Length: 222
Image (tube, rainbow, N blue to C red; front, side, top):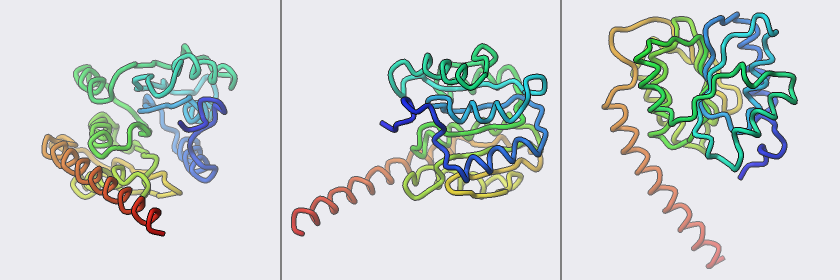
């Protein structure tokens, strides 16, 4: 378990937080802001505090609240400690893909999406489905785009290659920033993308298992 449930800090590095806050403060994004996977709410608090109370957009959080014990209560306490009203945030306790179906039915739109949920390739691809609801000109950020969490890289790279109306803007540490530059009649993230991500998840899982076994053998023979 990471230490953030106790420290209540963001899981982003200082450089990543600087990139994120600069993005929010300089682009004047007025649409609803969505966070998928909030841990202890540290990054959520930082994002909310990029705006003063009167100009702050509506924040929506999608999380199953099963990451650690009392997660929901800890998040609310964290926000209060940072001068924020937890009741101003719309918490949707659900799996990302299930919550997306309802949001799509209601034709919701977002000006900013931050993805930092489960890092398996198929889960990241499910989170990327929310891009369909991103406004043109809006930004989508993915955390943990690194070799340590290969599933994020595989899903994001396929997404960028397949959907050219999304452009990579920056990569700071493991924070990938993408902007939606246009609209399309073809829905982002199809069943083919989900099938690909599921197959790649199994492949990456097998690869990690083999690497662990090899590492164990080297330790025993070393």
